[in-house]
Length: 326
Ligand code: IPM
Ligand code: MG
Image 1 (cartoon, rainbow, N blue to C red):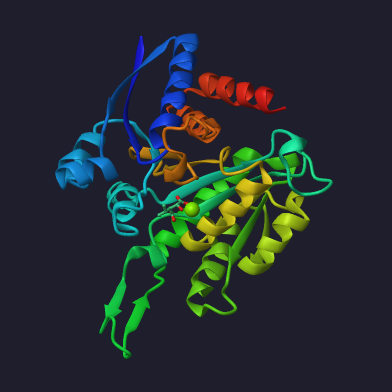
Image 2: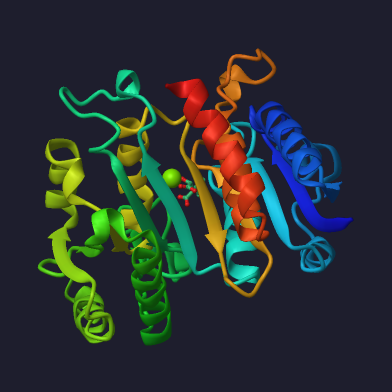
C-alpha cells in the first residue's frame, strides 16, 4: 500500500481542534483511495514554549525535512510577545524550506456565503499566488534608540530577481493549468507607482509573461485590486503579488468566499516539503469551545492531498466540502 509521511503541527488556540477534524477527513480519504498516512505530531507553539522554553529547534526542521508535507493549525498566543512564535515557527518553516509560493484559492461554494450582493459561485473563483519568502517579512531592519523621542524604526522591503521570477513563473504555469473559461489570465498586483522598487515585478512580469502567449496579462495596483475584488471579483483568474499585499488581499478574498473559517493555503516549493494551513489565525478566545469552523483546515488537507499527488482523494475532499456548503 502507498504510504505518505507527513508532519503535523497543530500549534496554538483553535489550531488543535481544527487540525483534528482535518486529520479525520484525511484518514477517511486515504481509506477510500487505499493509501496510508504516517504522521508525527509536534507540540511546538505557545504552551510548549511556556512549559519548556523551547521554541522551534533546528532538529525539528531536520525531522520535518524527511517528510513530504506539514499540516499546520495556527500559531499565535497573547501570552507570548507579539510575532515571536509566528516568526520562529510559520516564517521559520517558510524560510527553512524556501517555500516561495503561498497559494491561496478564493472560491465561493455557495451564494448564501457571499457577502457581496448579486455575486455567486461563478463570480468568485480566483487564486492568489502570494510571494512567500521576501518583502518586508524578510526581517531586514530594526528599531534604533527604542523608547526615546529620537526612535527610528526601519523595515526594508526586499525583492530579488530570483524570488520575483520564480513566483511569477509559478503563477503563469498555474494559470495555464487552471485554464479558467478557456481564456487564462494572470493579474500582477503591486504598488509600483509609489514603491518604485516594485518596478522589478513590472519588468519580470512582462518578460516571463511573454513566454506564455496563450495567457492574458493584466495589472492592478493593490488599492484598486481591493476595490475590484469586491466590485467585480469575476474579473480575476490568477493573481500574483508580493508577500505583504498577498497577506492582506487574501483576508479580503476569504470574506468573499464565506469567511476565515473556510479559506486554506499551501506554502509550496514544488521540490521540497511544503506546508498547508488554514489562512485564519489561532483565535485564542475560542480555544477549546468547539465553535471554530474546521473547514479551512479540511481544505488545507485538500490542498495537501493535491501536493501529495493524490488527485482522487483531493477531489473527494473538495467535492464533499462543496456539497456540504451548497
Ligand atoms: C498568514 C498569516 C501570517 C502572515 C502571520 C500569522 C505571520 O497572517 O499566513 O496570512 O502574515 O503570513
Ligand atoms: Mg494573513
